[in-house]
Image 1 (cartoon, rainbow, N blue to C red):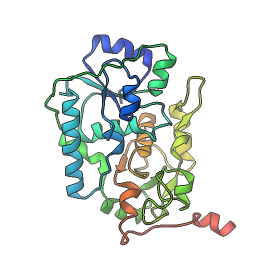
Image 2 (image 1 turned 90 degrees about the vertical axis):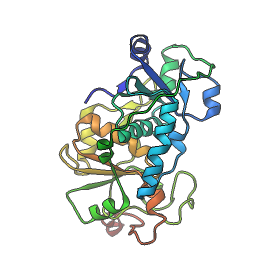
Image 3 (image 1 turned 180 degrees about the vertical axis):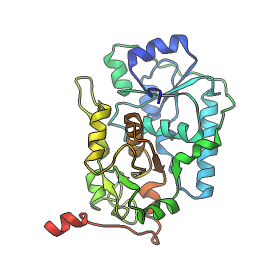
Length: 289
C-alpha cells in the first residue's frame, strides 16, 4: 500500500512538483478563517448521512462524484484531504479518504496531523477561495466492494470468522448514548450483536505536535487485544462512517488485509427495529458485575 499519510513538510514539497487538489473538510467558518493555500472546502464529506440501501448508495455516489468533480479531480491529480487535527473532527479527513476509495479514485493522501500540524510546521495559510475548473471525475465501480450494506452486516452476525468492529466512544458502545449528537438522537441505543470494540482514539497517540497514528506494530497489537489478526476479515462501523474511516485507514496501513465498512453504521442500524441489538455491558462483564 502506498503511504496514504503525508506530513506537512512533504506536502509542501509535493504540491510544487505534482498535480494536487487539496480538500479541507472543516466547516465553512473554519475554512474562511484560514486554510492551506489552494484548498477547496467540502464540508459535506463529514456531514452527509448515507443509508446502505441501493437508493442510498446511488445517492452517495452521485453526490460525491459531483462534489469531487467540481473540486477539479480528474484522476490525474492527487487528492490530499485534511481536517483540524486527527482526533478533533471524528475522523472526517479519513472519511474523505474512504469516500474516494469507495469511488475508486487512484491517488489519495491524508495530511497527517491536519491543519494543526501544518501550522506547527510554520507553513503559510491562505484566506483566498480558489475557483477550480470542474473536471470529469473518474469512477472505478470495482472499488465499491469496500462498502457493505445492512444485510451483509446482519449476515456477518452469524459468522464468527468475521470481526464486527465497533469503534464508537464508550458511552455509545455500552448503550448510554445513541450518537455523538445527543443521547437520544437515534431511536435505539446499543451495539450490533457480537461486535468487538476498539475505541477509535486507540489508533492514535499523543505527540508534542498533537495526535498521530500509532506505528503499524502498535496498531496490530490493539487489534490482537480483541482477537483480530492481519488475516481476519473486519467489518467496521461507528455512527456514520467517520470514526470508522479513521480506523480503516489505520488497519489497512498496518497490513490488515480484508477491511470493509458498514457506512450506514449506527445511524441506519438503530432506525430499523427489525435489526437486532445488544444493550448494556457485554455478557462477560455483565456476569462478573
